[in-house]
Length: 209
Image (tube, rainbow, N blue to C red; front, side, top):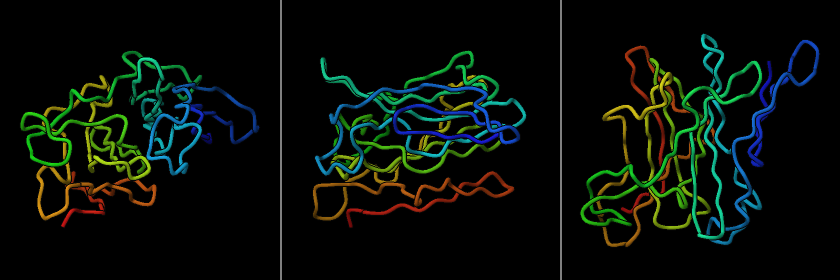
């Protein structure tokens, strides 16, 4: 089985033995140029950027989509669990990844002592990681539009519920003399690494120091 994921928000399941398409999942729509800082490096569609991860035991593909609508101006990111057999959404899929997720801090974009996830400015660039029944998702920026931060958030692979305490933000607090925070997790498109003790390893960049 080969998986082709596109910024158009489609994922094709290709039968490696026969070359035919065994299924297709559609998970996102065009952003219509509503996202980013006008640099045009992710346009006209955002859809899927980060490489999906597969659970071969349950025949599930996990992937994050991004989309937007112009009126009212709204931005959406969602975690999808797709059946590898036919591309259909599994029960409970998708789940929203939105500004209800926040951490205490003084970093760029802080409101009331907390910094929330921003589905507009955050862009899911690294590959997803599946470790001990948890899908880990990491973010950097969308065209370097501030404010953004590096995030890693974990979701239960079975229920897609956010795992309690599985939220890490690289730049929760403002330091230095500049106004921005940044600290995006880019990884060159690769997924975080993991060891046998359940630890994740990743690189971030563009700190405000």
